[in-house]
Amino acid sequence: MNTNTVTVIIGAGQAGCDLATALRQQGYAGRIILLGEEPVPPYRRPPLSKTYLAGDIGEEALYIKPRAAYAKQDIDLRTGVRVTAIDRQAHTVSLDNGERIAYDKLAITTGGRPRLLPLAGADKPNVHYVRTLEDINRLRAHFAPGRRLVIIGGGYIGLEAAAVGIKKGLAVTLVEALPRLLARVTGPELSQYYAGVHRRHGVDIRLGAGVEALEGGEQVEFVVLQDGTRLPADLVIVGIGLVPNTELAEQAGLEVDNGIIVDLYAQTSDPDIVAAGDCTNHDNGFLGRRLRLESVPNASEQGRVAAASICGQRVAHAGVPWFWSDQYDLKLQMVGLSQGHDRVVIRGSMDADSFAAFYLQEGVVIAVDAVNRPQDFMVGKKMVAARLKADPATLADEIVVLKSLVA
Image 1 (cartoon, rainbow, N blue to C red):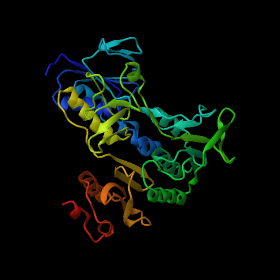
Image 2: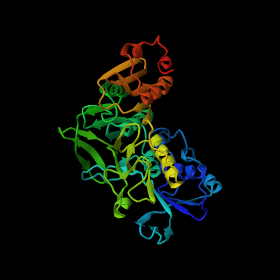
Image 3: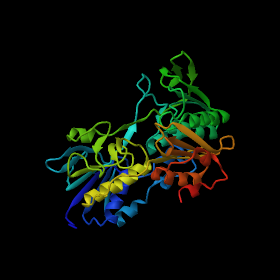
Image 4: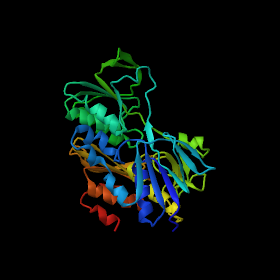
């Protein structure tokens, strides 16, 4: 392979880091330049709202690998730099320090940013978001016992932050505009279960409750709901979704629609530009449709697919989506997408906090949510990947060895 080629990667998150590593693993001998806006090496984001917010781990434990490892792989990692423009004709990217870097191949792995709360006062200093190391460092300083925390949003981020808040002795109120928690990612049974878990731990959950206003002086003092309820707040966490960072791609004239449009091979509308991770709207070979997926496994796989494309190989992105969340002493592991299911089968006991929910569509297992059941989750991944048709009574019967169904 030509050692004179240059690949520039914009975005030093999970997708960008894994793409750079995969290039070397796949024999790419050219120059690799990995550009990140944050001043630290690429790090894992999931622990931010869990163990890092709780103070159980330090910053370096978040790093995907030590900074020295990039030099060892001959990856030119540059942190604290921002790309301001892509010139597709000249094959260059411009940095905020005035530098221009020429590329042969370009990868866009810019991820996303938190969706901002569209209310006056949402920029006050005690309103927090959960996305970056800096966000959590700022938030941790205010996580003191007895403080009143209002969380807006009942998705993964909101629930994980609520669990840490309870652990740290805060008085936690969680507000969700939809009628149930985790409504976008799981079925009603899991939503009801997690509402019960959090209420049992002392979280005041308000469902079907839109936020009307944020009141206060220099800081937010009350979160006002649409029904007029005024919730006192010392600090507020907003977790209402992610906006893909597509501005550079749009300005460069790439095809964008709720993410940078890429095909099965992470290829954009420009033959010399690939994209991967949360910023993409991609074809998924397993699902047979296009979607934007916010998950670490997806970012990692898509990064490897993009690296293969740069190396001239054709590796389709066909992974089964999977996710996880840690709340209290519960590990939730999810595989597949449950939308469109017509039946749910529970194996195990919700009361004992040890169960798996199997989502069926015309008898086929399309998704599995497992709580404190890692073995069921692993078997569930095989079931979903195989599009297994299963008897509901057999799935629910714990006398039956689950893995025997996929042998």
